[in-house]
Amino acid sequence: MDASSSPADKMASKTASSNSLDSSSKSSSLGSKHGGENGMMRDTPFIYLDGEEDQDQKNDVTYVCPYRGPVFGALTITNYRLYFRSLPLREQEPPLIVDVPLGVIARVEKIGGATSRGENSYGIDIFCKDMRNLRFAHKQQNHSRRTVFEKLQANAFPLSYSGRLFAFAHAAAGGGSATASSSAGAGWDGWAVYEPLAELRRLGVPNDMWRATKLNESYSVCDSYPAVWAVPKAASDDFLRRVVQFRSRGRLPVLSWMHPKSQATITRSSQPLVGLSGKRNADDELYLNYIMEANAQSDKLTIMDARPSANAVANKAKGGGYESEGAYKNVEINFLDIHNIHVMRESLRKVKEACYPTTDDSKWQTTIDSTLWLKHIRCILAGAVRIVDKVETMSTSVVVHCSDGWDRTAQLTALSMLLLDPHYRTVRGFEVLIEKEWLSFGHKFQQRIGHGDNKHSDADRSPVFLQFIDSVWQVSQQYVNAFEFNEHFLITIVDHLYSCRFGTFLCNTEAERVAEDLKHRTISLWTHINSSLDQYLNPLFPSFTHGAELVLRPIASVRAVRLWKGLYCRWNPGLCMPQHGCQRTRELLSKQDQLFKHTNELRQKSNNRSNNMQTTTRLASPMH
Image 1 (spheres, rainbow, N blue to C red):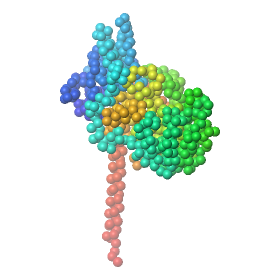
Image 2 (cartoon, rainbow, N blue to C red):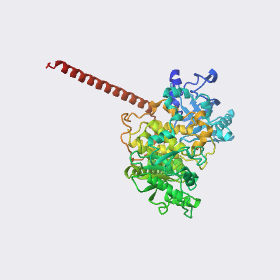
Image 3 (spheres, helix red, strand yellow):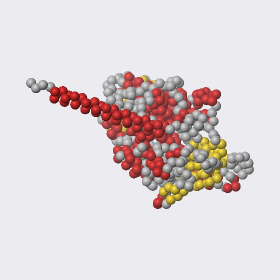
Image 4 (tube, rainbow, N blue to C red):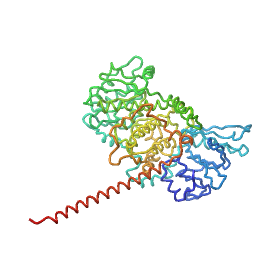
């Protein structure tokens, strides 16, 4: 990576760079000076973020690169990142840079011992959540490994050592929020992107059949649900309290989306607590009937159970289960065959093995197929398309659930809403979609990602949200002009899902985020993104409409779904060549603006010429 940019360019990159993993925008010569805290100057190999502090530095470390071989250089560890910069052997040789936010690290292990004699056999292995593995070799006689290992453990896993995630230090030190707000305008404050009542009004709620309730304002009715719900108008708050008791974790069906014409709805919930004995609950049955009756276009209600049918049956032994078509009148149930978090975690592990660090070209497609990752993505896409078909074509309301309603349910509701509603295919709308369907409805980001803890083998970790982003990318490849945002936007979201630089994906529930006061103690990822939107815009998105088609129906088949190499293979130069997508996007957007401007000028000239001709005609007319 070239690190020869000017000091002015480097300082500008501090606010303009969209991605903390994009080390080329932050690299600089080792001897350059940059401002630090309290106006102090310090030698730095990169631009420090607000709140970022040195923890350790070693100048005699070897990075064992799987593609270039051992590279000697300097290693810096801060409370936010690990940064390695090689010392080039030749004057014109560009340095090799490794820049990894510590939040990306899943596991750190020592390799070798006092008796190790092989070259580069003594050091540290680092396993990352973003598909990379890194190895740094140390010289035994320097005794440098111990302090590097300790600093990595303490700063990559602060919650396991009574520490705080970097997002809090970043915001407390300024976090660039003032710059972002002034650049993006007051309306682009990331924490203000989603306002529940405003989004409900956009959907047409309240109306004759639906109302908003703040029954859960103190999170005492359901601690994993948001404070504001939209529910059938026929259901009183006291009635809702009774329904809650028959749903796993108290997650009763509430509104996610409403069709603007037919009033067909998508509601989400957890499984009913029917158990092995097939228990019934009159309130729950009546409540689903209220949801069906709120849609005058249909006399049926479809339940989309995300699970394989065998899993749904097995859940009865744990007190859960699914709705019986005999007990719930005018209800049909469909099982969508999406597997659980443990299956998905193992599938992603196999993808990582296939993509990094080496690949077998002769078995590439077979290896990818054997991971079953694309099969799982196809199931999610196919499930969302079935929901779209019911709502759009059949004008039938749909209830979506899995077991607890915070993993597969979120994948299906969010993706189907994206396909149905062009608003969610804009930058602002997609941010709202994530805030609403994932964050407010309690997807357990803390547990699924493992922010700041060293329990790398925790069974609760799973790439559920990553699968959703992958599914969105798949749709964007089939409908290239239907999305306002580009691939870089999606990758940036994934990168900062792990980085712990922003507060957006911290904690498990809305209640926890309110208790932690994240809106005032951390910076939103959306503030950061919205302050430099040009990097994330799709030049093919037609600015005069909101997507080429109102409703999208992607093909969920083997021929259409493919591995996202731009994300999973980006660290392997043999599979994913370096791309300059951001720069190309900016060039295309600039060209588009020029063309629009030129078109308007020509239109104005044409109008002026037409007006002049009419004036001339009137002046030349004979007097009568």
